[in-house]
Image (cartoon, rainbow, N blue to C red; front, side, top):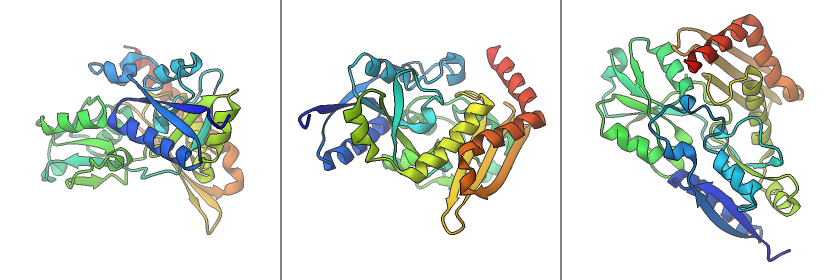
Length: 308
């Protein structure tokens, strides 16, 4: 068994490969042998349509799921925010690595005057679009797709005022420019900044190896954020944000969550601090509170709008 090679599946973008190599190094340091296998996902190939129009949950993870079920790879590494809240039958979450920066940032071109004027901001995320329009209703948002390198190039080649990125992605591959601002008012995607490794539920060798990489605090806070998302039935489409932070001194969890209308005009937000003991159903309870206070009707409207 010691000679068994763990085949690590990943997308072939620079960021995805960085994440796979990070997991590979951690496994190698524990004495495991590994091999990286890169594949292209449909989400990387179909760049001419907004993500929600593709109508596939887990557009970035599906190709790797199939490769794992077919026995071509043993484990897969993902940005956790891209992973559907319900994993395919037979595949399980095996490790969540310690969370990096969870913030969204605005990359701009050196002049911030546009914040007080009309402007065009690019992002492929409905969550970012809705929150930007909520804060800057006089701005226009345009769709931006591709891996982080492609998106950064598109911004440089455009007349847009700026584009929104996850800070963690740019930091991981040293692409974070000097001209950016932290969007600390923007609630991130559930599990943003966290990496997850999945494996087959019957692969005890891989599961035993990956257990050693798991960060329990990140596992718990991302579980809550994703439970909130799943209960709101957001999948990867609705403008939903969630962030949970653990306060070690007080042994409490601070929960921030929000559901927005597509145009950003409606914002349903929840902000609570609870004892750590309440973690198991915290995401569910917070989502129920939103759903019971008009969120169910808003989710219905969002789904109908996205079908058109």
